[in-house]
Length: 110
Length: 114
Image 1 (tube, each protein chain N blue to C red):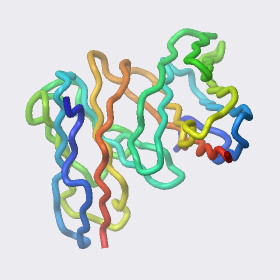
Image 2: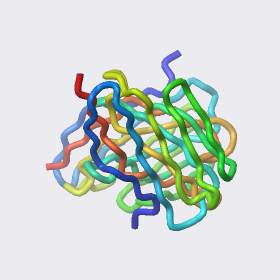
Image 3: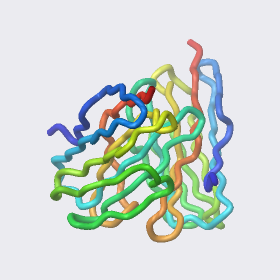
């Protein structure tokens, strides 16, 4: 069964609006990675979070890892058309299992 | 630097046929992975190889076999293809430590089983 749940499945925003996607796991994660996949493309690594409560920023993107290491979020401030794509979280469970969320497909309306 | 190269990019098979998907990386990575991506399901790990000479099952290994031919190459074989194996297959590689490093993905193989 699905180990990592991700919501929402789709999000349409006007350019300039903010966007957030959330990942939740029923089990504690060793780490969590975030990837972006453009339509027709392959996943591209964005960031990895390891520590409880960790927050990392990349320009307009802010990534958080929950205190209990069971949830994570990606927030984009002032979206641009270049942000279009599907954002996936991937949570490591135990030593050798990595479960991808179902992804959030972001559409940015100019 | 090509990164991760997958062949073929597209393939159509009939039920029961066999085929091998090829993957090669030129980043001197220890770990390699095979995923499948289905609509609404995200990516699911089929098999992985932590290092040359070792392979392990992922979340959905049934119906597949793999071979880590050398450090560069990791192939995925479908012995008797079934329509349920219609999917996009991605190969990925990462540095030291299974699933602890960023994964670099190939462009994918779009496989249809009729």
